[in-house]
Image (cartoon, rainbow, N blue to C red):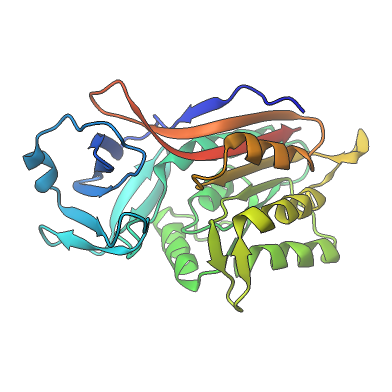
Length: 303
């Protein structure tokens, strides 16, 4: 197998989110009406704005240590509401500071929401069904539902699913056909295979390490191949070639030890035919000729 040239997907389609500056391992962000400073280990360059611009942010996340990417605490320079509304394209949702430095959404994923929406609109036949694994606060699920799909959203965290339901209400999609399921992703997929269920699209954004609601352990390097193989079995058969599947698959990984080449090559073991893209995801930078790299991805489409 020959490695293919990487593609860089830049999420430059936001009106309510911007990176104002970055450098020295951090980023200064505009998130709706508020400004935040959060760690960004890949921002190795020097910042452009003066220190006072950074220090006056509404909230600053101080990591507990250099090696701990999520541990730490927020320091608020002023009182903020519990949540506030943001918009992407025609989708409304809620942002909030979480204990793990996140703001309840990942702006770089908008490149995948558009891809999934295009696949759903190009779908032929009955109403398409999409499976969103490790679905977090549900924005991919809502984007797919708004495009016309039935969605099954799976996450091991009841709190994350609660956030996703809040977003469903904020988006005005309370009647959308979405199943919210708190379960271990791999265990759920294996049960769906036994049930004979099939999907037209699968989205997965697995963590490096995690636990299911019943104590199941997830380790990316050891468990990802089995999950990808199982996901391939869940896609509908291609009527022109029963040995291959049709639909789409999107995989995103935040893991500094894993190359996009490794992710792409393990995914290609299980999905035949169709069109592939793989590479890095990034966010644009206001006022500077820079992008901030965020994750690696591999995605496939056979329609």
